[in-house]
Length: 102
Image 1 (cartoon, helix red, strand yellow):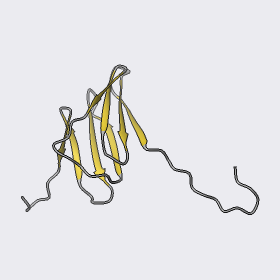
Image 2 (cartoon, rainbow, N blue to C red):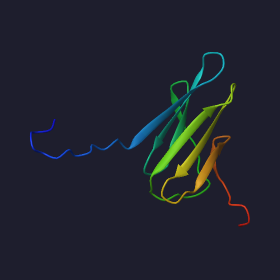
Image 3 (cartoon, rainbow, N blue to C red):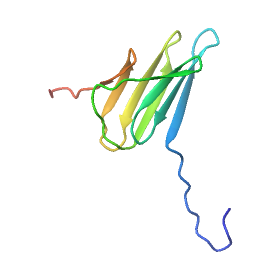
Image 4 (cartoon, rainbow, N blue to C red):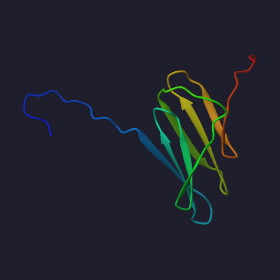
């Protein structure tokens, strides 16, 4: 609640976020993630399963987008500060590489 004459102060949007996508046959997939650490989990019924990392990642600001491919789903994560990106492949984050670099 704002008092008369006080400036509006933005409220934090929370540390965690969740993405949900519909699949065929009335199923859904859910991805929960920490926007600061980049850690993410996908749901199997009512159990969260961690998406494993290739290595250590730094604290930053992360976003994850999830799309349905019909029978399955794909997730992409971006570090919105550095631009580094990963895709979820079989329960692991796999970093994208820039063409022409090692």
